[in-house]
Length: 184
Image (tube, rainbow, N blue to C red):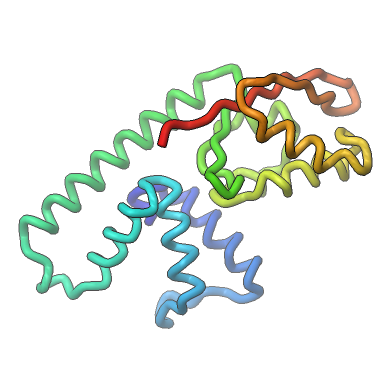
């Protein structure tokens, strides 16, 4: 998975999953269905769910059962995806705007550091699968969103092509939020 998402991001995501399930994952133990689902979701955030299923199914086959052409194509596809991911991350890192992409379940898939810094979000927010609802809860706990307005703010995040403002932090910075649909 780190081949597609990068080592650091993969490690952060698995540590977060371990905290969520309340136990450490031992590399020598067989993976249970919950771990496989998490791995598929995590991989799917980078390469799409159909590709993630294909990659995982190929990995479960014994190496000598995989024809050489299939293994070579998988390696080439992996390298191309990693290159494109690195290129995208570099481009996002150079932008002054905070950029983030959520999947259809409103879980974080792609972001840049500026996104976290503009909203003054903790580092734990920077992991694949972090829910938009939890980001809104953090803002509410901090007082950036008035009590009882969390659902309204969530709904405004989900309205496409219509900007709205949030006032962030003790200095009361005004941040413009704009949501745009991603192509299928």
